[in-house]
Amino acid sequence: MKDKIDIKFIAGKAQVSPATVSRVLNKSKAVSPELKSRVLSMIEKYDYRPNEMARGLIFQKSNLIGIITPRVANAFNAELISQIEKRANQAHYDVIISNISGNFENEKKAFRIMHDRRVDGIILLHENTPEEMAELQRISDIPIVLASVRVEGSSLPNVSIDDERAAYEATRYLIQLRHMKIAGVFSDSYSAGNLRKKGFLDCLSAQNIAPFALFIGECTFHGGAVIAERILALQEKPTAVFFISDEMAIGAINYFQDHRVRVPEDISVFSFDDIELASYVRPRLSTVHQPVREIGQYATEMLLALIEKRPLYQPQQILPHHVIIRDSCAALEN
Image (cartoon, rainbow, N blue to C red; front, side):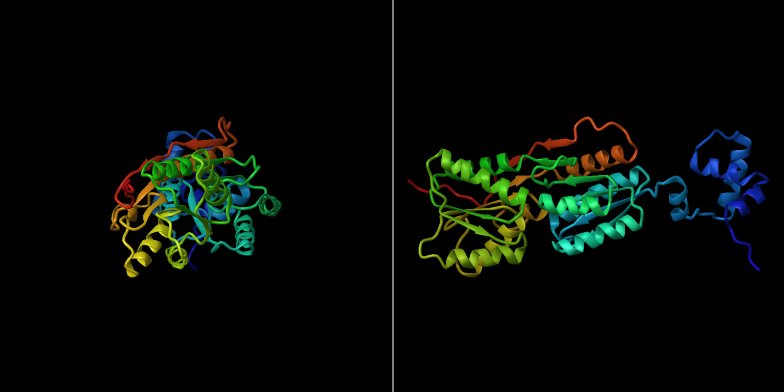
């Protein structure tokens, strides 16, 4: 019968106690170089891999981080997840990802599963209402950090840009191009919806311009096409449209072009996120750049600090954004 390769087996082969093997594995106490060398030699010889779940039960730490995203196929979220995973791996943490498809019942289920898996913390990419967030925190009391989103009135640690200011600056650019008939396309969320809509409306109000039209849609290629269809159904058309996501804008441009509406000659389009595709589509998108690499890194660093009970000196991180001017907007003639 084949011997079970566990901590006792390794201890026997190395001629040390199981406690010494444990100290070598977890670096909890000093072990003499000679004993450490014997233990590591046997671990390598027999390819011993400690049971991570058992270690988590003993040390109350799993070295697992959970990521919950509303839509993993979203280009911005996909890149953000990649950056979080990269930084987590550097710190010797593994990552598990839950794609909730924007459904709150799925999100609650994901929190329960991650609680059962004993993840050390969660990075949340989904926008919730204060009531939903309170319910999620009742399910699990592990540390939570928000990445690129915020919850209204919440003190949860988060990393994002100033969505309101970014939308204000994007709208101001359209006004500088002499556009007066500007439509805005938003979602029903807080950061991408309410904050960006407020920035959009505040900028128009500052110039005594009324919003030409407001739309609510899904931040997807299809969602953008649906909004474009509604825009073309209007008796009078806007001269410019501000979309809150690049994917929406690309879907809308595709629909416009299929219906012989030229961008930017007939309708200017400005968007948000600066995903990689934004500089490859034609026309190339003018957009708000979010520093996705830094957002991912900062969010992970904040969560690691919470997990390891280190001080969190700045729990609300606002990172700089940039207005990127490309080819999807044109000035109106006098």
